[in-house]
Image 1 (cartoon, rainbow, N blue to C red):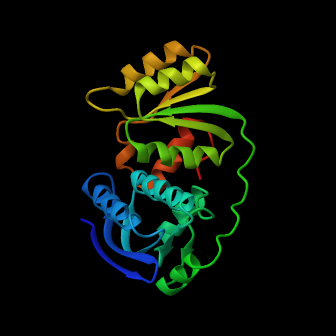
Image 2: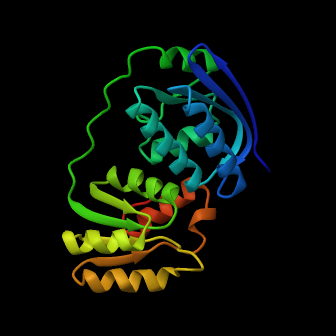
Length: 229
């Protein structure tokens, strides 16, 4: 099911009403273009997701990335009328305190106009993790999940940047995403592992980007031998 978007604004808050799937490909691209356009003039955005019936890891990564961007501008991104599966997704990824949800548009809009609440401190970091994948949204998704499980996460979308980071600092884990036709995951993983022989090298499965966000979260935790959410 494709994604349709309707937009309007209420005062200083931009509202995007979403219907359909938000998944990797043209749907995520379309939503990102709309968010980019909104953020040129607005610091606060409300996403009405009452009509959204599927989200994958790329979609959540996109929302986390834009929420972080808006917060740095002094604004925020809120969700309105999320389906139960969206609330469950935010809970298992420990993102509900970062991307706040409200039962209707009015409350979401009002929350944008109040002072933002202080975020809860993240848990103490225990292991250094380098994540490499050309997709910024995939990297952001992994960052959000793993940082909430005690990992000090650095993400890069360039293989050259990943090499520089590994030369400059030691890491405990290297996680390589599904990769692209130009840079297969196995080839990238081998190159990075050679620079950090003491680090544990892991790879995400080829279909990771197409998984529902809940399945992707559980898959990611299983890759690290952690209990599924």
